[in-house]
Length: 193
Image 1 (cartoon, one colour):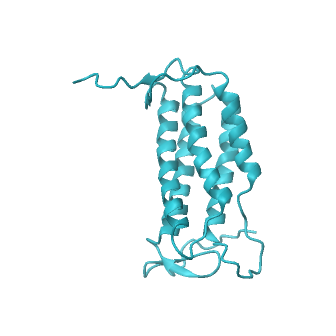
Image 2: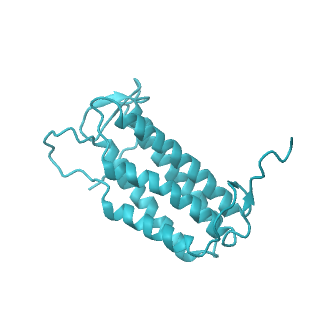
């Protein structure tokens, strides 16, 4: 149970922060960068939801679920699984959360024409916001991959799959809200030479 009754603690004033294990690390530690960028992805999804407006109510429900799952991902990353006994069961990303993204990608993609070029961020405001969310989630993924490659800094396979699949989901969703791909702005290689 989360209880936040005091927002500032002064414990981070010297440039460290606490992990869910109680361990203190520098605020620029790669683990903090990873779950901080997951949090940034979540904030951008809040902007996406505002940009969607009333046009995509079902998609908005998906984003509400994804925002909650991103907090789960942050909690997973905040408590590295180093095999130590904890006083509580840490929250972990599951295969079911990955499956949800894959199912929704497949459903949306069925309604889209195959691409013949790369897509430039453009079209509707919600499509552009989704491209921003996609690029921020890719940055979170890069941090997570770096973290996982660091000795003694485990990241679960499900967490890595989730963040990878999320950027795929956001790309397909950007096309979906862009009038089912009809509003996509396509890259024309060498057009301005």
